Figure (tube, rainbow, N blue to C red):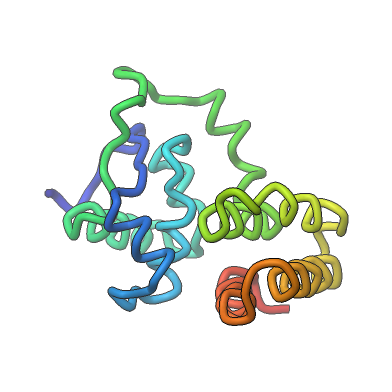
Amino acid sequence: MSAELPLDWILEKTPMGRDELATRAHHLMPGQRNLLILADGHRPVSDLLKAGTDPQRCMQVLSALVSDGYLVRSANAPVASTAPAPAAAAAPVVGPHALLIELVQEQFGAQAPRLVQKIAQYPDTAEGQAAAVQACVKFIRLFIDEKQAAAFAERAQELLPPR
């Protein structure tokens, strides 16, 4: 695989990529994990490059995730998609609240809708994000598992921008 991916490609996680998010078995770095989380089968590479401060570095990480088997080109992607309209619609999804929502969807599956409701109750501010994480941690402790609550709190801290 070349170092440059086409900007209109839409990437999705492979079973190995989903396993890494669930177990951390391959010990990816936080930046790699963030891009892995964001590659949801809906966003083109051009949108994923906006996730970090250095698009060139993001391209290298995405290329490595593809060549290492964590991501693949989505089979459901339109053939000639440059995706200007979906790119504009998907741009707000890269915010901190969206990252938390994607994290709970990846990590908790069937229980994710309840956690998404908790996140949506709080404003997308630093204080709101911290409160949303705490509300989710409490819910996870009470209804799911203490260890998963701790893992969620750690992953959320990695995803959210430092304030």
